[in-house]
Length: 257
Ligand code: PGA
Image (cartoon, rainbow, N blue to C red; front, side, top):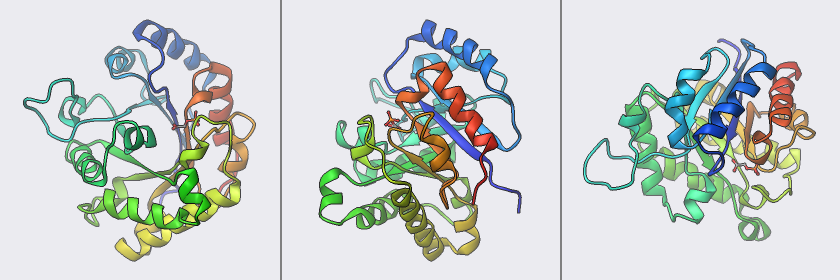
């Protein structure tokens, strides 16, 4: 089996307009080296995907949508479908905690979005993770379990290898509070156990599991060296060139698994 490529995803959220995004990518391109063992993925606003796609070298950067709608087309004012993103992005972030908690997305929406991405040749990055309250009452693993069951309900054993799972504890997102590497490891192991149970050992070995939540250039190496963690989903620290470039460089130099 080919070694798993490490994945570094920059989730820009609702930051940067098209012009800013283009300047940022231009600067970033000078700082990030192309490595066969690392994939660097940028998730700008929908608006910037098309212009940025014309600007990047696909060996250096891949693109991700931050969200998508699960119907391919029709009367869904304001939505963007996986069919419309097909060919433009390699990945789509699905079920991010901001989507779940601010926009009230439920497992059914998330599972439909996972299906829509797969049917349109887009790799879903399915996000799971517990809130501070769920953690305080000891439900971290139950929440991960339930969100995986919810998101993967219709995923076949052929499709599972095309999915990425991101463990993002809600209390660690944008808060500056990192999960301990032990927590990230515990979550990654629980995710793999469940994938083993649902799809077998080969699928569990192959699936990529990311950690996300207040990752910085200083903490990136620790997470990347954590057992079972194949990459990072980075929010705040992906918005400045030096910090995101430093994180990508760590992915290349660090040892894993
Ligand atoms: P953060 O965001 O790195 O700013 O915590 C991570 C994310 O939301 O994906």
